[in-house]
Amino acid sequence: MSSDLEWVPQSCTLPTEERPLRVAEWDELFTERLTALSRSGPMRLHLDLAGGPGIEERVRDLAEREGGCCSFFTLTVTPAQDLIGLDIAVDQQHAAVLEALATRTSAQGQR
Image (cartoon, rainbow, N blue to C red; front, top):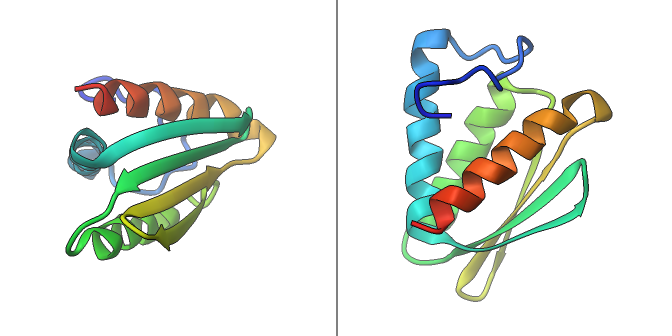
């Protein structure tokens, strides 16, 4: 996702020059906050992010902006005690995009 954004589908409406900045926002969040990642199928990804002051708002803001440019994502933010759950779902056509995102997210969370 960093400099090679080939995995981003044509249906993404975020201007190309803004994509690396958005990816960096997600990478930073995952590096700082990812505590667990799970898959209930090829079209669903669940992330647990460590909570804290302002984290829910940060996750909601990013999810809302991402859903605005990549309408193929269904992003659901669920706060819990000390955790923020982020569920990401896609249709069959975008399963490879979700797989790339899961791989990227896992790598960032291990840093």
